[in-house]
Image 1 (cartoon, rainbow, N blue to C red):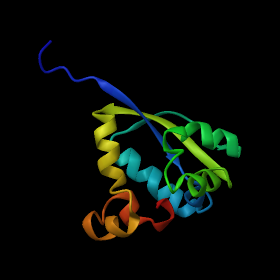
Image 2 (cartoon, rainbow, N blue to C red):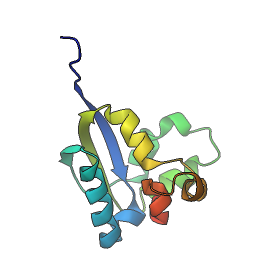
Image 3 (cartoon, rainbow, N blue to C red):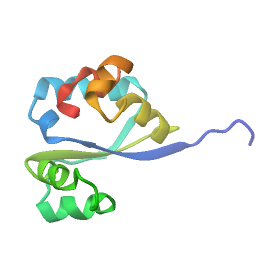
Length: 119
């Protein structure tokens, strides 16, 4: 079975700022589908602060933990399970660098480079 490539699953969480901008959300969803991702499951949810703290517990000792958990529990988010060949690597590339200001210059076609609200 040489040459057979299998689908991989990855988790994407679309953040509150994106969910609150329907036009941007539509453009991001179109970009995801254009990159040959299959959306296996998605759901709009409102995390409690405790939910966010549990999910991001590996960052508990980092300076941004309180800001991150407050932000992610501030409004609706959209977790999505997505599938495609090399899904994890491709999703990271499609998202662009973590810092949106850097992404705008170094990866302007990435999701973070295109949309400030995903920073």
